Image (cartoon, rainbow, N blue to C red; front, side, top):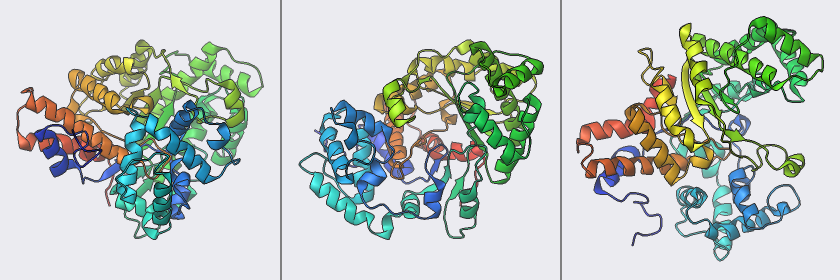
Length: 470
């Protein structure tokens, strides 16, 4: 029997252990998609206790605590203490066998706090006191967590109207040791059906200095902000869409849709899709001009529990996998950009694992010599970034594509302790490659294997995004 989460956690073969320990364990990290706050990095925030860094905005954990029948006041809000919330999580943990949160939480306890036991109601006092003491030291300030995790690049998630104040200030910190770059997330400009769209367009008009009245002025305003982001070091965009739309319409039709919405009138579902198609095509062309990466996240049905959405708002743990992501529209969208030779580098993420094969075949239709692995399938996302989900995504990509060009892992997290997810991924990667080698499906060529796992863990990402490593 293996020891609990020891140095060979998830590594069952000699080859897997060799690849992990000798090659990728200590490689740097590029976290090219996350939701952490750059202001907290600039201010070098320190946390009073483990609840603040673990449970403050982690809807992954909130879902499981709710599943344990815990009252909402012990999960979110200000009606309970940090210790009470921690105890609710500690009581949930022993039931999470097979859940990635169990592994992630213990990897974090091991790496950042030196705790090798397991969290439960019986050990809650020990863990609380240990982590509280450790967090009081400068060693676990936000900047030092990042440095000690060997993180070289962080891409945050930023709205086009953001001032990027904290990114600009961080660039002026001489001894920071890593880069914090903005990533463009224009969902509020895309989601024309939302009730706050008109208010957002007014803010965009003010920040850009362009009065948005039609499609041409909207494009000008966004181009103004794109250039500002580009000057601030941005080279990554991200979109959260229901699916990748392809409902083409001419500019006159899009003008009419925008004017209709700005006048306070309702727009139809088809008009919504036509607008989103036109805007995403425009942005895709701009990303090509700027040599940015376009990330598309789709396949999620959000805010399923209306009562809880009304109480807590979005991103609080009430989203699920969607079964609707038409592959033909995704292919047509990419084709429309390719026809005019304006397809940017693209990474596709579906929350529905049933889309893996479709994505794996579509990306093979749009590769070219401008970039190695120009169109990518992103790593297993959200509900899929667990042991079986990561293996399934990587096996599908390997079977249908060029696995050696894969960009590997990102945290997609709001927590500064989540960099251990890269370690979790690297262990699974080495285990999978090791299985292929030891079953005779791939030669035991150490030079080739070293290059393969190091590229997927780090090097491919640096090359693909063009990051400068400090």
